[in-house]
Length: 103
Image (tube, rainbow, N blue to C red):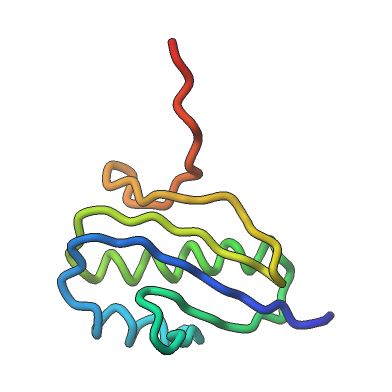
C-alpha cells in the first residue's frame, strides 16, 4: 500500500500550553510545519479510514490534556480535503461540522 501524505490544520483558541500539545503530536508522528501556526504533517501507511480515525483520536487526546476554548480541524490525505470537524465539549470528541438548517 502506498503511503498517504497527511496535512492537518487546527483552528484552536485559548490553548493553554501549545508546547505540551505539540509534544503529544510529535510523539504520535505529527510534525509542525515551519512558520505556520497549528499546521501539521505526517505520513500514513494505513487506509484512509484508519488514518482519519487516528487523526481525530490523536488531536482529541492532545486537546484533552490541555485547556482551550474551542477547536476546529480539517485535514487532507494525499491532497484530498475531508470535511471539517469541531470539538464538542459536551461529548468530548470531534464531531462532523454540518451547516445549520433553518427550522
